[in-house]
Length: 234
Image (cartoon, rainbow, N blue to C red; front, side, top):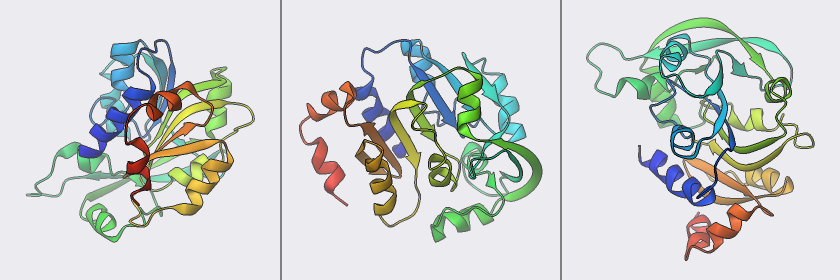
């Protein structure tokens, strides 16, 4: 939960006073627990797209009546449409942990978090399997005729960097990107990749947060004393 609070504290600075924005949240879970976008919808009147491949989580998401398009699919890591095996996790008997933390760890078969402690946690869950259709992120945005994404949030349990490297940067402008990265070592190559697309890293506590260099949101953040020190503390 502390990681979620950290994301909220930073993203709320970027989008303060902004209404009517558009978000994309992949790994939306039930649309409420651990959501990076619900507050933007409720408090700022944003709309967006919620993608959740887990059948149980998606069914729960629909009951929240979010003001967003929803899709019970997954984002492709290859840039092409394909079908993948989704691993749905639930708590084993007598296991003490919030239920949604385990459901939130559901993932594509074969993908790992590159973090031994976290991967061991995933292996403790009771697994079930389903086939899920996966589409490039560009496909969803073209279908919705979206060319500006104010917040892109990726929490797909290990496939985030592969997904973002298929993004059509030449077609769609993105202002703020939040990417879950559980790998214990600082991801220099990924940060350099994003820098090459015009983004500045502004936070990396579990979630790597990037803002477009020329965006007004970054100017607001730079006005906060000490913001750069937190990023350099790696």
